[in-house]
Amino acid sequence: MTTNSNPLLETQEVTIKFGGLTAVNNLSIEVNKGEIVALIGPNGAGKTTAFNIITGVYAPTKGKVIYDGKDITGLKPDQITRMGVARTFQNIRLFKKLSVWENIMIACHLRLQSNFAGAALRFPKYRAEEKRMREKVHRLIEEFGLSRYQDDQASSLPYGVQRRLEIARALATEPKLLLLDEPAAGMNPKETEELTHFIREIKDKYDLTVLLIEHHMDLVMEISQRIYVLDFGETIAKGTAEEVQNDPKVIEAYLGVEEGA
Image (cartoon, rainbow, N blue to C red; front, top):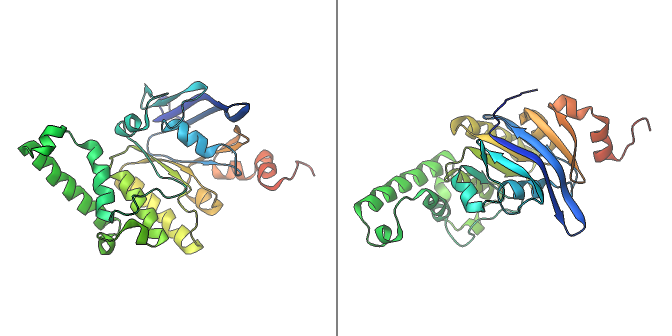
């Protein structure tokens, strides 16, 4: 198992309660720079809640989230994004009435240095930044195979293309850490296989670290260097794909089969 004294992302005994329900309990994970790590578990296990804590949507009841050596617990989502954390969602969240170009351009504005006055009056600094943003959008559209769709509304795109656009938009914020929430949801086996190669490709090309939630086990087992398994908000197993596959607690959680039954 990979170990690192300075992981890029670490959650330290993170717990969150909603009323009397404990959605995540003492979650402690580490994601090292350059890894692809998966967070898996049955429906309702707390996976997306964990993502929401990491990205600042929820503040934990207790515990800490450490990113790149800094305590980001309780920061707002936009602050965390500016620090280099981007995510996609299980239910795709694009600006549906905007074009592919506009969706990516909006994300680029996160890195804009000019203030409102500079943008409104189109000072030279803003014009130079705008030129760089347009070049970045064009490059992402080319690299993600979106050229033929660049003027189309996001809502009109095929499902798999919408997924690519969502990931391209996330990368426009220039992240170090990319959180993918069920990127293969709704995809057929061929599309899932293509996505597996695509994730590896962008990880290497953009020097990314990836934390992944996914129900497609073939994708998870093929792509992940390490896996954490949640059930009812608690970590029941962690390790390599082989270690997790053969863990009796994991088999019970997924299949409802008790050890020795």
